[in-house]
Length: 612
Image (cartoon, rainbow, N blue to C red; front, side, top):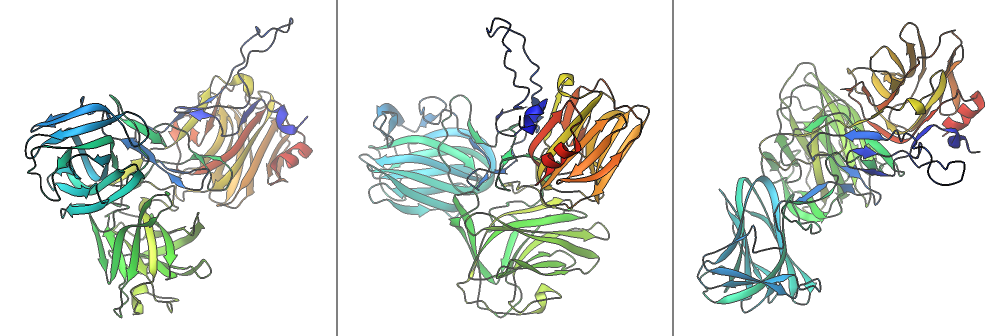
């Protein structure tokens, strides 16, 4: 028998849905009765309930190594143009047309008056991309428009596959052939008050005066962000995909799938992907939107190129006005220039330098009452990295996020101490900036708003009514963590626990700043076991408990024991990750596996179970 087959509860993050993380054991299948028929009793499943509140700000690294977001087509009836849509000023639509996808789901958009339009009202703010598939009819041009205080539009030539007139409020526009004379048209813009989207069949570029013409349209989409993504069909409700609300995040940052559990965090940087808008300022450099494929796997990264001026100020920066200690991060792919710095650019000038010739930290420069530390380079797919660092202030102060292309000769002191000239070509691709309160970077939180931060709620994962799966008089708890972090200054951090409905009776594993501990409390007496451990790496931890026979194992080694004649708690009925009876604790974990055993495993079994 394999050791894991002895488990009474086994969680390997593989099967899940919104609000639920399913265990491998107990299986929940009906056990056969004495006749062999499947008509016996139902086992208690003890599956975990999962919750992340009502926001959609969470991301994960998927099995392809790409950062996956929540996606939503904000339009209703996105391919039913005679429903929520309004045909105004003499426009009309006819269904049943041959589409780009081989179906008869396309529509004929006809105009009979100057300015005829197809409209859907929509309230939205921030960066959005509107897309639609279109084909020439008797007219060769289509206008795509987002109505707002700063109305943005672009005219597209459906005969030649080219972009015509774009107004000044357009961030980007694309036209992509999908075959058969069909194109996907996209318009990206940013505004604090989008009120509607419009589609026009127009007679010529920048000319809406035509009174008799048609084009074909299909599958419209309005989504948050700098580019269009795969089409999501919507009906009377919006279409949704990706990291959905309350969906457990199985993250592949470490290679294998692990359940990502994180504290509540907010990205206080506005326009975290739109670097030439909102509060962003750039000096002595050029930046180009949608210039390369980002870690998201779509073409929405910026190209940041230092210019040829001899200056230390090749930079972009943005005020975010977060107070106190925070961690800065951004995704970067060097493109000819290998020396970069994160800098607190509001009041102090503290900075952390990164050298991509050998992926090392150049310096952590502290000044002006600000301590720079925790510089980190994390490799991703396709030449991308995430760089991060923590800036701790002696007193609360306003901050600003700065990214500098640094001089190749900079090794210490201020990043602004050495002037240098770029060649106007070499630089780097950038995407996904973040500033969050705390001493380490958590997963990326997209913020496309120009008016404030975006908060990702804490992950909550627990099960009640699991007394049959928990060893009561003896047992073992095991966790395999892909990554371990500790939030300095926070509470002790519960990794996994079994408990009654009070805080005085439990078996749990938790962190303090320098140790991993096991704690067993029966309401009267307690046992504590501890060992030093290393944050930021994989750790396998097990605690075995039995009256007079307690042990803590870490990565294949017996770390601590206790032979006190103290009985474990009885009547335990719930299992929780990263919280104490509903109170979330500030930490991040990536759980590759967790298991309970209703027996005290032998020391040899504990060593085998926890060996890396």
